[in-house]
Length: 203
Image (cartoon, rainbow, N blue to C red; front, side, top):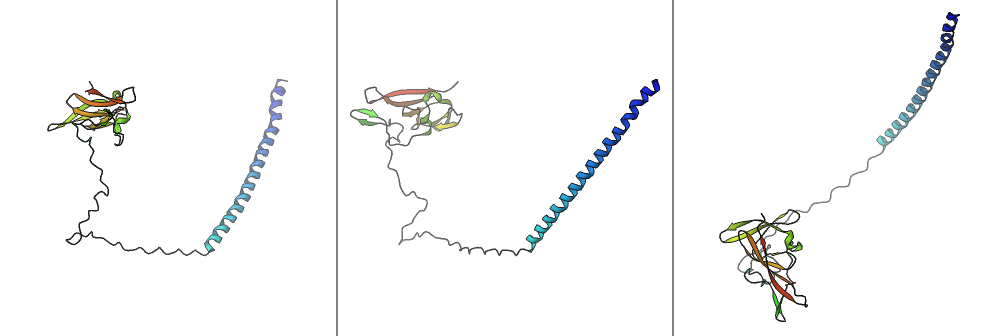
């Protein structure tokens, strides 16, 4: 009885294993036949297209346009014709009355100062004065240049006559440890007034 109970399940499972193996083999054969059929057809189509392209007549290439030879030009400069400098500016600005660093840049209107709105604004005038840092100085002879750092950590070199800050501040003097400037600010009554300011060397 014990032998029958042990061998019975083993004998029953053998046919199921064989049928599973046969089904797997049949599936593989079917897939192989389908892939081979598809591959043969697509390769034939591809070869046909390649042959058609090879037999297609080529399109002629248009010739390049002719290149004109470079002709040099000599600017006349003799006694009969005045010399022409091609690098000379066509327009010269009138002298700036504020160019002298010893003269505050202002216009007197109705007995009081007013900023010069006709001049071009300088780069450091877009930052408040307290946002700039004096990092050091450069000296050549008796002339000092101040080294300033803006909020974007970009370094600038300025000297007397330059403008910094947002209050029309003109640098009057640069020393080893400070910058002195003169600002023009609203006086609260519709006019303007001057105000002295300075920037010390950052520690």
